[in-house]
Length: 388
Length: 165
Ligand SMILES: Cc1ncc(COP(=O)(O)O)c(C=O)c1O
Image (tube, rainbow over all chains, first blue to last red; front, side, top):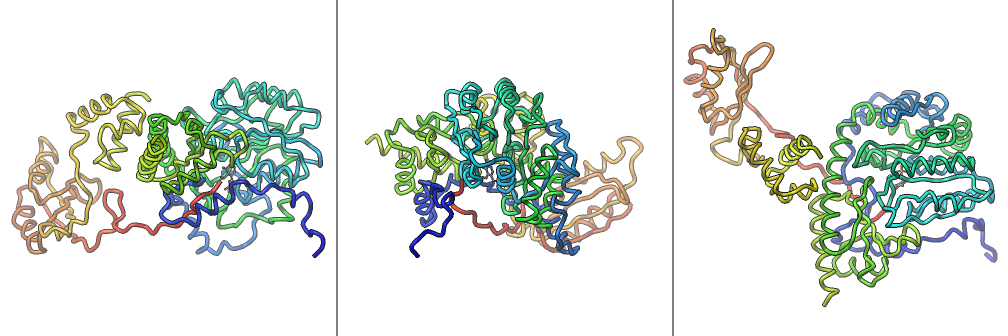
């Protein structure tokens, strides 16, 4: 084999610099992990039970490419309830294999080679690779701790060029837990309208908003017709393994996404679609119970970090604390590595989410309260050992 | 959080784990310890919180190996309705819970005892013969699967990946 068989745009995708670290964590025994980006709760029983029932009934066939109409209706009803945004289930909604697929469809449907896609960093690891796989140009705008990691509209404005086609937002944000306030949302919406941008809003953590009701950029003037609302069941309803998400937005874009989905995926597992329906019908109390528990854990973990001298903002959503560790004089990766090897506590270096995550580590509080308190004691010991 | 929200959250938290201290609760709610301690004291004083006890498999103890629920029909009294007889029955230590019910019978009692005989003896000598009790129907419990919101057998935990983005 003299030449590489791999397509250049895939060959050139950067391998995450922290892959080795992830490998190291996975080979170690007895680790307390604050490194997990999924709920520790098992899917609520009412949802699991309805999935079992759907097999018993013999629901084993393909569904409509867009997803079952009953699920699409339930999703549109839910969004109307929560955000006051109305989508037409027949043509403005598609059920996908998680937000992961929705994001892939959206980017492929919208981006032509050379189009620029702006997103904010630190952010979820898939955004930049997704854009590159579609031959687009990812443009990262750093967010800063001084702004509580919200996207500063002025920074956004500066990043826009005539090649900018898409703005990708994720609030509440993985890994920072940041949300946008009214004023920031309104300004960002204005910029999107002014430059005729399409906005992909990844709202996978929206249910897990702690102060006030969840909101969406799609509800601002001029935004619904240019926004793709992406969300799913993985986080709020603790259904990561079911793999169900959705996109709602302008019929024209949903239709384009449907074409890709139809040829590459066909439809989401029928069983998972039934389970998702049940989640929206009867799972809200369970979701609310989990949200309350995350909130309690957030309060505990944030106080613990601040008490031990690692400044930590109060995340307004999702289930991640993002404390600042640069006072230890170590890089994020070094800190995470030493903490793992010396105290067997796993955290994710901030740099996994972009260069501007340097100086921070992400600590998931989707971990039992017991696990959190033990981990906090160990991190305190670790800091003490550094002082000696 | 408003005072009412704090009050509810304290009840929820203690309902899940009655052993948490005021300062642990305060951390979870990000409020002042003093406020939690005062609220708990008030809840106790007003008998909203009636007591604290562990949930365990009661058949571990000889005196509560046998459990029964008993449906009781009673004749309500002209003054006081069902309350008088219910209060009277609830004083017996064998009675662990007592409810007034809608439907085909009036009172539902949960009874604990060391043996079948002991429970049967209580029913015939104390309960069925009490003035105002019209009839009883006793059901012995065979196996307990869940109590006070807790499963008696832990669910097997699905293994999560140790680290994910
Ligand atoms: C910001 C963000 N978007 C999308 C996803 C993927 O979600 P799904 O399970 O719906 O594919 C995750 C999962 O960690 C995430 O953190």
